[in-house]
Image (cartoon, rainbow, N blue to C red):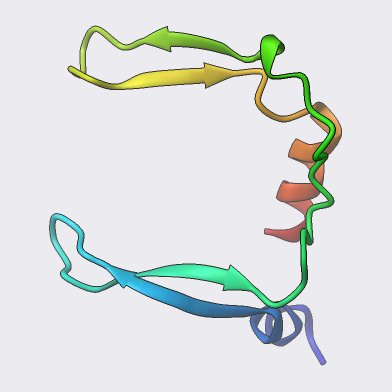
Length: 77
């Protein structure tokens, strides 16, 4: 099985959500629990929030994932 078919076998459409240009955008789920091995032992105090003045109500979060978690997410993408 090639990588593309292997990846598709793990994912499913969990729901269809309305978007600005499309009324049925897929929200994906994964049959494997925690495929990126994200930590559930997390210190929330390290997360930093920055308001984005250019976009009312928008904000950016920093330090949410470790470098290793980021790499695993990239590797499985």
